[in-house]
Amino acid sequence: MLVKSFSQEIAVMYLGNVVEVMDSDKMQDIAFHPYTKALLNAVFTLNTFSENKIKLLSGDVPSPLDVPKGCPFVNRCEYAMEICKNEKPLLKEIEVNHKVACHLIEKKEEECLN
Image (cartoon, rainbow, N blue to C red):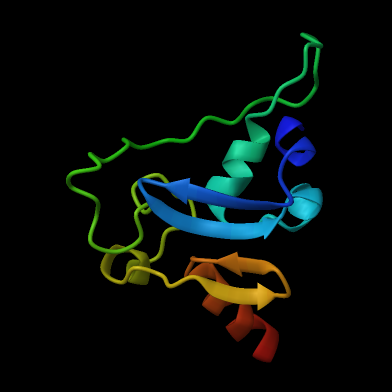
């Protein structure tokens, strides 16, 4: 991927909000935010017979002048929960050099504790 060749750290933004920050050399392995995963899934090769099909995001992109109250990606996220509609997730370090702004982090942490 081209971005790895000129950047050590990647910040993924959606509607002017940072949703994930990570080392560029690990991004394919550690990407967590649904938008980051969608971007990585959209990378294609020149091989027109590729078995990897690009999965399109559903939902409408909100106006940058009228971003949703909660998570800016809530209208397009297949994992959106009620909390996503009401509370904007904070950028949280989930491991060294990897930060994510997503309520799925809390859900994942709860599942690990139970």
